[in-house]
Image 1: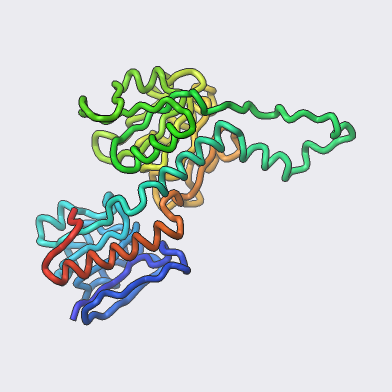
Image 2: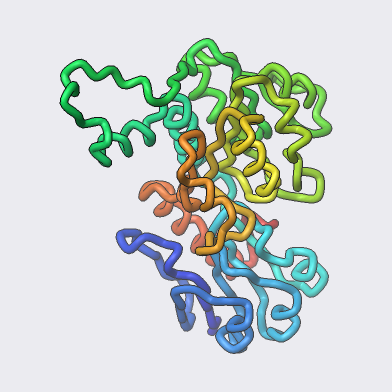
Length: 318
């Protein structure tokens, strides 16, 4: 009889059907589990399921019954995978559950930013445009730019990056890729220098690790092509947040749109929230992954990972 604890059920939309593992088990779920709550809640667990709730070494060391961590996401930076490997705890994730989902959101952010969709929506909502001469009003409050025929540089050559490239190419963009340490590919690769100096938009689709953390600081943002924008639907920390704020406020960077912050989940004191009044900045709260279709597929595959692990034929091991 396995004891399974779902640490953060609130990460799954109410309409999503959550299948149960196909073997005898006890199932307990919590809306969200902070680090200091983990040991008490999972003390008898043989399996924990986490979307984004942290599972760190300090708490893992106090869970001697734990045999598996099922990550119901692709990213595993919130789990101490090294500790799990060293202590015989298997970790599974759900890779590429819906590459188009994140790519669609990133493309939507790019379109909204370049076409100033949010700014003009907000303008009409505020009624600030309405005056005696409204019949002759021409709306030129915010600068609108086409993305057709512009160059987009995609950081990362995984399935999401490729999906983003395919969509961007379909809109007539010139698509190039950058991948650290990769020199040959069927994709059009460019150097980091060329990425910064020639791209009208840069979209991030790479993991957060020691080599990508602070990949974009004020130094790199200053080197970007004049009028360029940057999109981050990957991981917070790839762009240095304080440097991003300075670059936007000073005009060094024409615009930015992000779906993820360094301290995830987003908190009321998140520094980037101070930029929300800027017309050249858009932020969404880590929802790029969360279409109904993607979430259902994600949870189906996460539970199937548990089933396969129980059978002795584990899949999607990290």
